[in-house]
Amino acid sequence: MSAAVPKPRLKTSAMIASIAGEGQITRSAPFGHALVELARNRPEVVGMTADLGKYTDLHLFAKEYPQRYYQMGMAEQLLMGAAAGMAHEGAQPFVTTYAVFAARRAYDFIHQAIAEDNLDVKIVCALPGLTTGYGPSHQAAEDLALFRAMPNLTVIDPCDAIEIEQMVPAIADHRGPVYARLLRGNVPVVLDEYDYQFELGKAKLLRDGAEVLIISSGIMTMRALETAKALAADRVDVGVLHVPTIKPLDTATLLREARRSGRLVVVAENHTVIGGLGEAVAAVLLTNGVTPPFRQIGLPDAFLDAGALPTLHDRYGISTEAMCDTIKGWLR
Image 1 (spheres, helix red, strand yellow):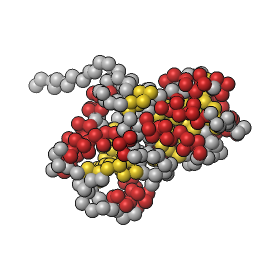
Image 2 (tube, rainbow, N blue to C red):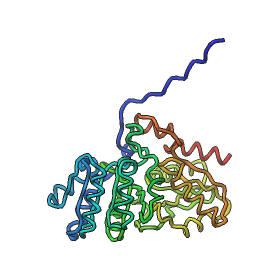
Image 3 (cartoon, rainbow, N blue to C red):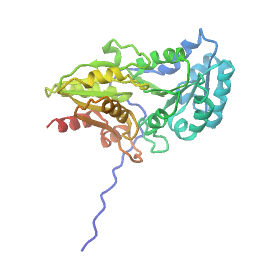
Image 4 (tube, rainbow, N blue to C red):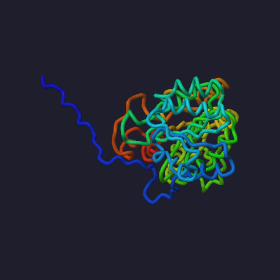
């Protein structure tokens, strides 16, 4: 009896860092530009990073306000401790690093030094979820689950360049610690078609639909809108509810939309299906006695592969084409 031949491992080549599609409109470094503008009239705003100014768009702030910029070296725990100290002295630190380093390396320092004292520190982190092809060391697939569990911490997952620009002054006006995912570099422009205005703690219905409601955050709202347009050609009517604030959730809007009968509710997230938006929404619905047909699109409970982002997004079911196929399969 011959041994089973193992399946060849799929390979990809280029490590593509941008999530923008071909020909898609983008804006360069929306976070960096927004923070520079914010700081013009707010001398308490300081920028802090752990050797990643260029890769979190904070270099723009450093160029404009070099005396208010602190480069802490490759020491994320020190970065968070120093940010706590600055906040105690009246500064408002905007702290950047990669999401994996904040969530997995500096978690205890954020928990004990920042969140427990409810300090006014804004932690803004690049490479959230599956937005890099460099494998598990850089893919923050579980950051929302970790930070949702931290008391006092507001958690935000913005969709595009427009929302990032609007988010910066909004979180500056909010007193208390914030964790925000960051799309850096050339960031897609998506929400310009929807007369959108970011409001902390508020979900927004971007598109109505009678058959399917996709509840999404971050880049998955872009994918959800693309999916809704694609499925319209197949006469499938899809609505999209964008939920940029993961904590606190806009419970009232979620319940209002989920109570509408006859719709499949799908939560789509750029995060593991464990502990993220999907499970948060499910808990809200169940504890309030709302039980529509419910499905999740998200990353698996696994260490993800390295490779080119389009290949990985297809492989893990978060590309537009994969979402269309999945949802059509659920409707059969």
